Length: 286
Ligand code: ATP
Ligand code: ZN
Image (tube, rainbow, N blue to C red; front, side, top):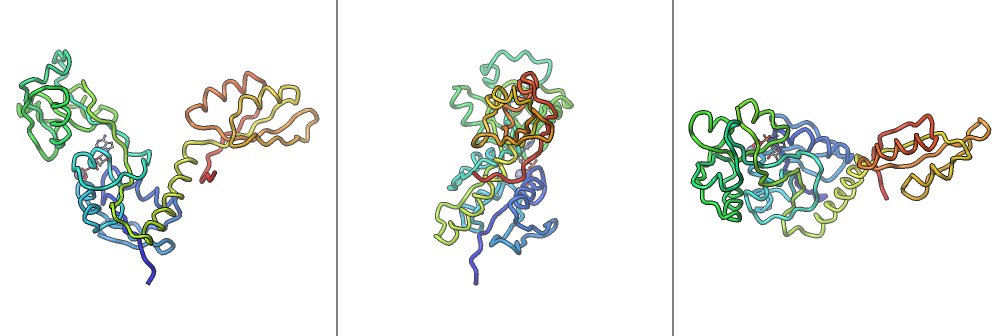
């Protein structure tokens, strides 16, 4: 029987959809697993387990699953023997200290002797120890943001992305503890066969990630401006230049990365480029 790699992903929650989408973008056909514990891909040697995110590091350490997708925050909190193989670029958030909006927060010393509610006691303790602050850590399992309002704590440490949940609960973010995103983790002892499947999957994940961070750009350039315009384009090699039917004009094709994108587009316009088209790239293999 063909060997399979077992991947654990979140059953439902903030990482579920993006995890499934990533696998699908990698050409792995995942039957949606709502209310299912496990499913198999038909076109790739992968078995998918749907679990609570908190349990994923343990399952991967114990080799119940070979690899998993989980937030860095959970990986570090659980502190299991697993390896992080790849950052996945989604599920971005930060673990932060928040206090009542009206509090005057003067700095980390504010937390001395205070009661801090969190679902991340390990990370909070490590953070406070590093800062030399003594505080009482109250571990609670959910709805941390209401703890100050009901008098259970003076401050909280919780995950934040936009900050709107904090705002709705009369809190403000005052101190970052950890930045986090979803990562791919693996068991430390995978046999050669499994490693080979992991390599195939990683190759695809990297191609999908690269594509997401890049755009394909087509533009028209008057030939007398062509050199200036080409000089602005990084491209994978040099850009492709094709003559247009209209005399004296060329079409230029290139790839731009997301973080330099708007800057370069503005400069291209100024340099005389016209009819600029920007197209998403599905996979990028270089
Ligand atoms: P489960 O039922 O699987 O235990 P959960 O309620 O613990 O789910 P979610 O709220 O679905 O977890 O969050 C899963 C992960 O999504 C977090 O551990 C974190 O890595 C990431 N995440 C990204 N943005 C946020 C955010 N704004 N708030 C909370 N988690 C976020
Ligand atoms: Zn959880």
